[in-house]
Image 1 (cartoon, rainbow, N blue to C red):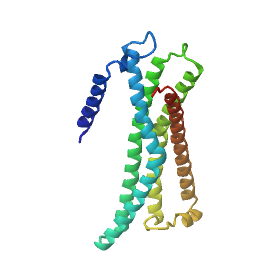
Image 2: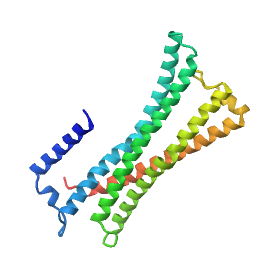
Image 3: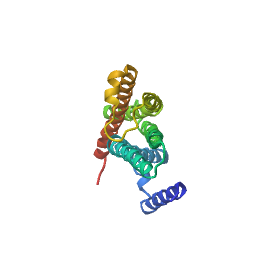
Length: 236
């Protein structure tokens, strides 16, 4: 199913919801009109997408993509050995680098999705709750949404490009040192003790990865706080 089919399916369900509950989008506080109702709907849909994507990045995606990278590395090495392709480890190295780049590309796409949805949520929430007329808790919620947007933008525009650049340099350095081609326990630990440049590269990459992880967790936590606020507004 392509993107157009998915979009038409979602639009059909939305139209069906409006058809069976025509007053739902027009209900609200006194003085609210169609723009405010549409803003609430846009905020809810965008927040739901951002919340789900942030959950995947912060908890599910990291472990899944890490295991995929390791398995692909081992499978490529074993298959090239069986087929007597020479040199097998060069193919394994190049494939692993490609998988790591693809992993960063997938995360960049998700960060882009979360950033766009967070921006829509911020705009819609700010429209429905103007700053001067908002209560203290509503201002806090707007701050949480802005914090989530900022953290995802930092991952998208700063940390992910830096990690891709560092990863490419690290693979090139390992190739020059003649390591990184083995399957299983890596010799990077021993070689890092002899090569200060490799040790510095690994330390910098680790720090960037830690900052990226913290940004993802802060974004997820901010969206979690807003989910608590939205749940308090439900009247089931």
